[in-house]
Amino acid sequence: MENKNPERIVECGDAIEWLKAHDKFEGASVVASMPDISEFTNTTLAQWKEWFTTTAALIMSRCPDDGVAVFYQSDIKYEGVWVDKAYLVQKAAESVGMEQLWHKVVCRVPAGIATFGKPSYSHILCFSKNVRLHDMSRSTPDVIGDLGDKTWVRGMGLENCLMITKFIATHTNSTRVVHPFCGEGSILAAANKNGLNALGIERSPKRVEKARTLQISDDKKWIL
Image: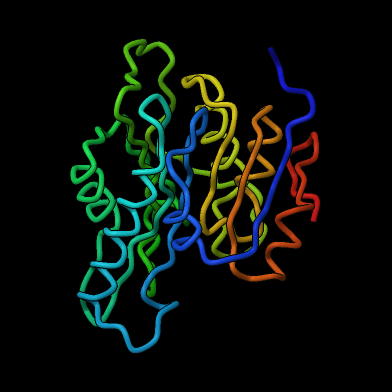
């Protein structure tokens, strides 16, 4: 039955501590986009990689077996080294016994244009313990050329948010999306747009307020 009045809850706090205090989210799927080393101080690359894989595994461990865990991550170029976050997320998935269902590439700029600070694309990866995709007729593009409208420069993009949450709504039995590190709430708004309840965790009070009110217009624009 379609949920015409999906709820949204946004809690202000540390996402890792919040996750540690909760068991698996029954009836839910999980979406995450975790911070990179630029948001840490006095942290080596090795320490950040360990934090990243450990946190990804923690997030996945809270996803029920019949749900999916979706990660949106952009690689970084750090002190002359390319850091592949897709690889780090895949390592975490193996450690908790999840299989990868799909891996999409999102073009941040048009093909053929050189970028310097960050690679020109981002990853969207989906994992599950029990969900399997046998009907290939329901496949969607693996390379996404348009992010859609964004709430801020590093945002996922409206089209990606709607794609992720629509996948959860149509390919799982989940009725809720849980989003640690929810930022300004783009995934939460997209989940509600697709009839799913949404729960976000964010440590910034300013972002929490935005995440509680962000909406999507019928012509696919953010209503801030």
